[in-house]
Image 1 (cartoon, rainbow, N blue to C red):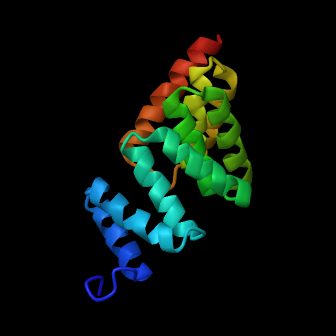
Image 2 (cartoon, rainbow, N blue to C red):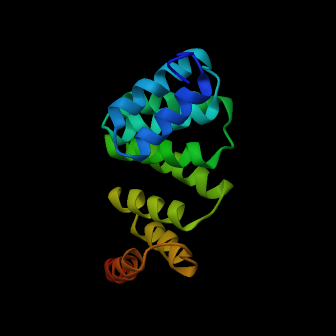
Length: 163
């Protein structure tokens, strides 16, 4: 369909999404970028584009997209969590914590608890990190068993640090 109509947004979006899932990140970003030129307000496209940027190391660009999404919808826990993670990777841990806490407040879930735990530990807030790790372990539904065991071990370490 893109051969017939290279501005077919659904085709561009689907191609970008599929290529992204296949690990062809650069190719995916081209399709997503073209789709965004046609539908710059499309939230799904922007989130997918931002995630693509983040996982390929283009964190400053990803953060700019996430910040724009956050301005438009400050109650989107997915955007807040992804923005927090991106800030964490850039070393801006305070902004990471701010966004991760907002995500947890809006939609508590194991992944959000775990990410917040990591950020809090990085700044030395062991007590609060342990609190969120306990919340993670209270209901780690859907999390891999290996990650759960690692979290259990980490909680033991945090408890020792608190003594």
